[in-house]
Amino acid sequence: MTNMEALPKNIDAERYLIGCLIRFPDRADEVFSRLTATDFFDLEHAKIFRAAQKQFAAGGIDPVLLAREVGAAQTLVELGMNPANAPATAVHIPTEVAKIVECRRKRQRYDALQTLASHALNGYSSEAIDIELESLRYDWRRETEATKEPETFTLSDLRRQYANLNQPMVDGLFRVGETVNIIANSKSGKSWLAYGLAWSVIVGEPWLGRFATTPGRVLLIDNELHRNTLAHRIPAVAASLNIDADFYGSDFTVRPMRGRLASLADIASSLEAIEPGTYRLIILDAKYRFIAPGTSENDNASETQFYNLIDHIADHTKAAIILVHHGSKGDQGGKRTTDVGAGAGAQSRAADCHLVLREHEDPEVAVLDAAVRSFPPVEPLALRWQFPLWVPTTGVDPKAIKGRFGRQEEKQRERDREGMEKTIAALREGPATQSVLRNRTGYRKERQENLINLLCAEGKAGFREAKVRGNQTREYYLP
Image (cartoon, rainbow, N blue to C red; front, side, top):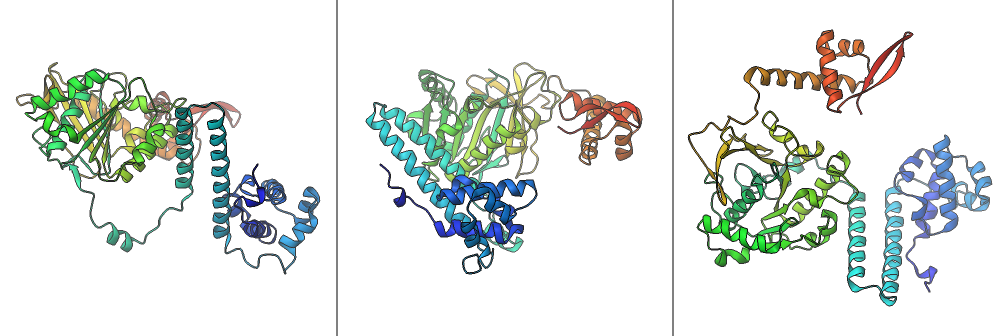
C-alpha cells in the first residue's frame, strides 16, 4: 500500500500559488495557463484552485465568495489575505509552477510503474508490459518536450552559436538533420530510387552522377515489403551500381516491419535510443503506414504533429530522414513540386526537401523535380528506367511532363494562384460578402467571384447565408 506522505510533493509551492491567485489576481491567467487542479497534491489546495479557476472564467476571483464556496475560509485567509503568510510578490510563479509539475510527474510515474508491477504479478506477458511501458515513456517525453520553455536568442548570439549551416548530406538537395519527401505515384519506382540514394551515401559516390554525397551508414525501416523481397531488391541495386553488397552490407541496416505495423509514435523511443551520428540517412518506407491509428494524413494538425516528431528524431540522431510518400490523386503534371504529395498542406510546408518523380511524355522516362529549402533552385532531371535503377538520360526535354498545361494555361493558373492568395489575405481581416471582398482586393466582380469559387472548391474558404441590409447573401470566411 502506498504511503501518501512519502510521495513527492511541494506543499509550500502549492500554498504560494494559491496565495498568488488571491492576492495578485492580475497574475491568475499565468497560473491557470500552466497548471491544472490535478497537479496539486493537497486535496484542499486542488479544491480551491478549481473553484478559483471557475470564478476567473466567470469574470474574476473574489476571495470572500471563494471561501464561502469551498468552505475553507481560514485556509484562504492564511494563503492570501494574512500578510504574515501570504506571498509578498508574484515574481516566483514560473519557478513554483515548475516545482509542482515536477512533483506531479514523479507521482505519475510512480503510480504507472506500480500498475506495471501489478500486471507482472497478474498474468500479463512481458511483451505486453514492454509495449505499455514504451507507450508511457513516449507520452512522458512528449509532455516534457511540450512544456519546455523555448530558447530565445539575441540575433548576435544566434549568429555566433549557429554560424554554419548543417553539413550537406546530398549536396544541392538536403543537409544532415533535414527531412525529405520522396514522392511519386504508386508502383512508379520511388523505393528503387531511395535504394540507389542509400547506396550512394554508403559509398560516398555522387547520386545520379550529379549530387555529391557525404558518406555514412543508412537505416531503412520498411513496413510494406516481405523480408525476402528486401533481401533480393537491395543487393540488386548495389550490383547495378557496381557496389559490393557483401563488403558494404554492414553499413546498410534494414528493419522490416511488415506484419508488425507500428506508427511513428510507436517506434520513436527506439529511434531516440540510437546514438547520435550512428546513421547519416534514415529511410521510412512508406510514410502512410507510419501514421497513427485514428489520424489521417489529410488532417493538418495530425500532419504537423507527425513532422514535428520527425524533426525531433532527426535532431537527435543527427541524420537526414527520408519519407517515401505517395502522390495525390489526379494528374500531377500541372502541380507545383510541393503540392504533389498526398495529404494535408502541412506535409508540403514541413519537409525541407521534396524529390518528386513525375511522368514524362515519353513513357520510359520520368522527371525528377526538387524543391529545396537551404540550396539554390534545382533544375529538373530526366531519368530513364533501367531495372533496377533510375539513370540520368539525355536527348529528352525534362520539362515535357505528361499532363502539364500549355503556356497560356499555366500563366492563367499562376494569376489565379496570386489572386487566391490575395483573397485569402482579405478574408484574414474577417468574414466578407462579395462586395466587401472586392473593396479589399480591388478586383472586378466577375474576377472576384471566380477566385472565391476556386477557394471554396479547394476547401480553403467557406460561406454561410447571411442578411445584409435586409438582403439574403453569402458571407465568406476562412475555415
